[in-house]
Image 1 (cartoon, rainbow, N blue to C red):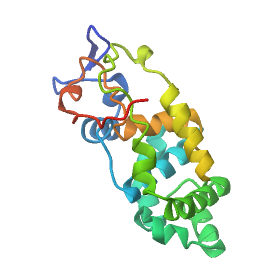
Image 2 (cartoon, rainbow, N blue to C red):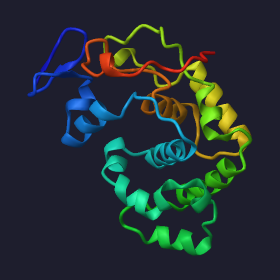
Image 3 (cartoon, rainbow, N blue to C red):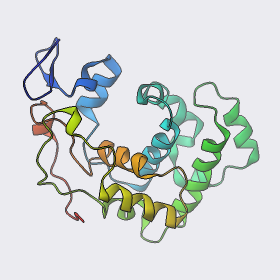
Image 4 (cartoon, rainbow, N blue to C red):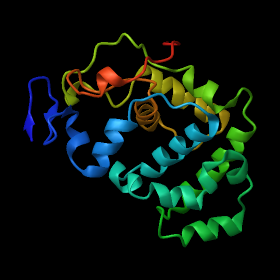
Amino acid sequence: MSTEPGGAVLGADGLRRCGWGDSTDDYRVYHDTEWGRPVHGDDALFERVCLEAFQSGLSWITILRRREGFRAAFAGFGIAEVAEFGEADVERLLADTGIIRNRAKIEAAIANARVARDLDGGLDALIWQFAGNPDRPAPLTLGEVPAVTPESTALAKALKKAGFRFVGPTTAYALMQACGLVDDHLADCHVRAATRPLASGAL
C-alpha cells in the first residue's frame, strides 16, 4: 500500500482509506461499513457507549475482535436486560474470556444500563443533540483529526450529569466519530463520499 497526497492510504484493492482503516482486515471492514456512519436507537448507542468504555486504555482492535463475545455476554446490549444484571452476572462476566474482564468497566456497563433505562427522552436524543457541524471541512491528514472537541466535552458533561460512568471527553469524541455525529474520514478516503448526511444540531 502507498500513502497518497492528502493522507489517505491506497490499499491493495485500489481504494483510498484513512490509514488505520487499511491496517488489518478487521479494521478494513469496520472502517468501510460502520465507522462514521450514523447510528440511532437507544440499544445500539448503548452498545457503542459500553464498547468505547471498555476500550479505554486499550486498542480498538482488541475490542473489535471481541465484539461478538461482548454481545453474547451482555444480552445483545439490550438496555432493559443489562439493567437487571446483578452480582451473579458480574461474577459470570469476570469469568468470561470472550470479553475484557475488568470489574470497574463491567459494573459501569450495568450501572449505565440502569441510567439509560430511566433516562427521560432516551439515550438517542441525549447523544445526538451534540452532533458536530456537518459543514466542517474534511481533515486532510490523520494529524488534523482532534482527540477532543467542545462538542465531545459537552457530551461527556451531559452523560456524567445523567449518571453515566467512563464517559470522558476523549471517549465521548471516539463515540461521536464511531456513530456518525462527526465525519472524520479523510478528504480523499473513499468512504467519505458514501457517508450519509449528518443530523443537524451543531453547538
